Length: 127
Image 1 (cartoon, rainbow, N blue to C red):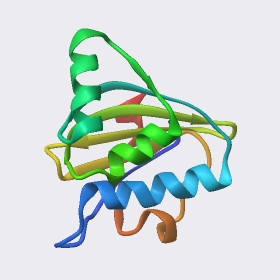
Image 2: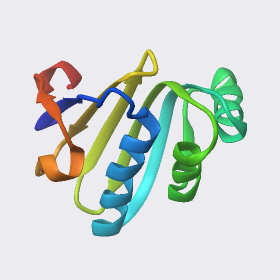
Image 3: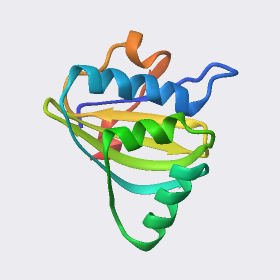
Image 4: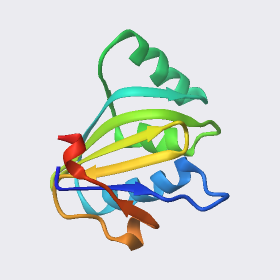
């Protein structure tokens, strides 16, 4: 991976809405190939479904529509580890404790207008 950032949320900002904005931008500029989740703990109908499936298996393939539905539903994503692959690059998205979000990429870094306030972190932690 070439770059990594930790997102800095505003006081009243929700993890899901911030991540949804980033994912929508990626999907509007790059061709979605796949999303593989390896960990999730989430509430809401879609979140509960994904959590139950990943409690039984190691990986779960998720469509772009399902990801956006997860980020839009009335629920909360507490933990998530997934790799979003597009025709241009690969992004790893990690949510911890329902409030910490790391976004890691192997191509050109998304600019701050897209990802919002953030702090660069050492990408080699994720190789």
